[in-house]
Length: 359
Image (cartoon, rainbow, N blue to C red; front, side):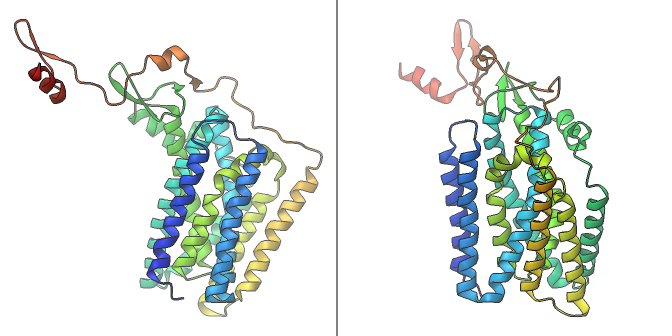
């Protein structure tokens, strides 16, 4: 697949432009409802599908099918990521109007991390062909483990990342709006929102370890691996607000995702030594597994409405009062004046000192 350099440059520019549009549309903290989330989900899916259509038109059906197979795999695995976010937000009792900000930064970090992982994976495959056996074995093991632990959920209270963060970083016990850092009594402090962001990035590393080998099972083209990942990740925020209150209904989805990982692991093993399974068949198998698991889940839980995850009886963090917010100092604290001699004061700020000299 021959991709001109200008297209490699244009894709990140388009992604950054769309992120800027999304950030501008959500510049004010507010609760994102189902209708708004559905509209943004449609926008992001349309962007991903339109790009796939361009790939199909410009490079042919085979590469178009590889893109859509990778996009579907990444989008499906991302749903499990969304459910983890819901658990984190519930346990931390993050106000709903603050959730988009931390998710925006989390997705931005995820794009960078995925880029690093993809580059590393491509480099390993290019230089060590035997690494494909490792990837395939890892996918099979991960899928089997997911089946066995399908009823287990993340427990943030036992997170080693959170314990390490709280031990190393001074932190407030209250949310101060959308701020990640605040200054109080001259001390720079992290807010709980920064701790949530760190946990989100840590969980994305775990999911990337699963998803990157999975997409390399359906395509060797780094351009398709990156773009399928990017367009799947871009819609995660909207997907979260659309599905967060429906977690209890997707009872068979984790089993379906495990079967997808097992399938792509088998496909990778067969591809190495035996024969190549056509991309169209792989795409149809993945789509069928996901569709069956979703339909079966919704049928098994029909009649159940939207339901938020329960918040702890005693949440670990609270929302700061207006008085506490008013008492905060600017992040860039002004330097205090020091005595320069009897009856005189010298300001360490050069601008203030020049102003005094002019007087």
